[in-house]
Image (tube, rainbow, N blue to C red; front, side):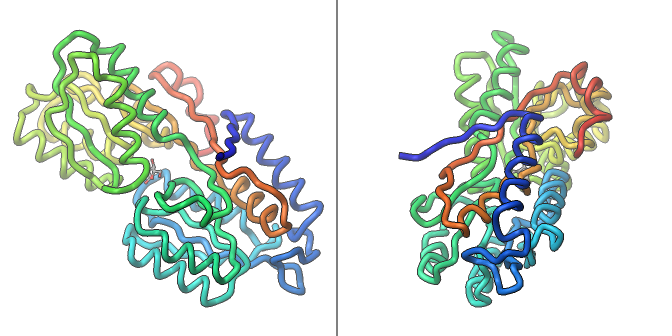
Length: 331
Ligand code: AHR
């Protein structure tokens, strides 16, 4: 049976600090080599990042690099796979061959991880997943830390259901990377939340979580259905919503008014578009997972029992709420 920990909102920052401090005071990060550290106490970690597809990803990479810093007792070997699954698996194999102390992966897609995770297990190298999940057995990794993507989709869908309810509504969807956990779960969560409404999904295509992808797909939707044939855009992330805004404006329409937009992430540019009325509602996806991931790595290397799943809680933002918090948000 899986264990589950939930960390909420900005209480997270305190929890993160405690996690990091606790680990640093009694294990490898102080320079006292633990189970996985070198003689000099440095813990070598290979991190296989998805790529650099979005503002969210940049914030996540920064958080990871800060947490796995030399000051904290780590040597970080960083790889960004440019959204190429084969390249990401090859990077993990390379970490195994280098004999790192631990591996952290933000898996691009859910499937295809069984073999390389087994190879890491055979080599005695613990794996911690961050952000996205995999379909492989959870015996093959030590822990996962991230967000509840299904719930994010439900929260976006609940807003749509409350906003449009019984009003016949034509919706298009800008999907994230095909086969990725957030694309799968945000789709199913949203669909479940709007199933008894008059919202009709007239089209759905991947924009690969990128701004350019969102723009190109939205241009295609606008050509096919016209501005008057689309009432609502559900974008699986802010970057694709921002691309859609460009396409809607280029078509001579007003995003947020002629076509409403709901998206997920709550990165700075997305929140600004919400404040400006171009996006109508945003569900947060917190990218600041670095300290939690580093704490898990140190605990695993110290032989401590860790939770199999560590969920970080998200919040939602209306235009008014976004205006209140935008200046104080760290990403
Ligand atoms: O896995 C998290 C998703 O990946 C974020 O929502 C998206 O912006 C990123 O690319």
